[in-house]
Length: 115
Image (tube, rainbow, N blue to C red; front, side):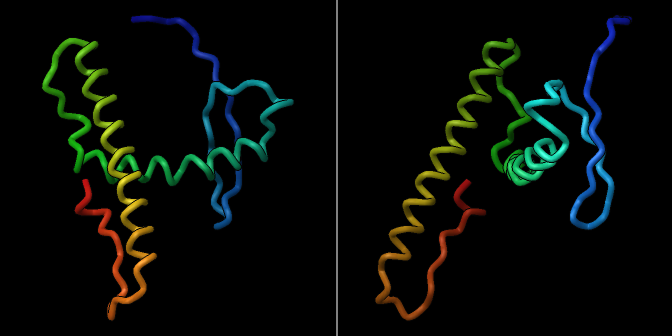
């Protein structure tokens, strides 16, 4: 059993709902990243985390065909590349949909089926 110490920074923040959240981080520079900045980073990160949570089952991000670490990294990076590619194509498709105003119904790009 490895008994090496792990040093972390614990920051207590209050959410808009009044709920208290405890953040654990390796960002130690209190001058650069004060509590308010930690809260702002948390607010920015949350939608990204939720996005990955939704994508993991669709992209099967935890089911690898390789056993070696190099192959797993390559597969993971390929998945991330595909997520970004689909997102870029989706943004482009939505712009094209928005540009064509001659339709009777309002179209919207289907992100759920894109992946």
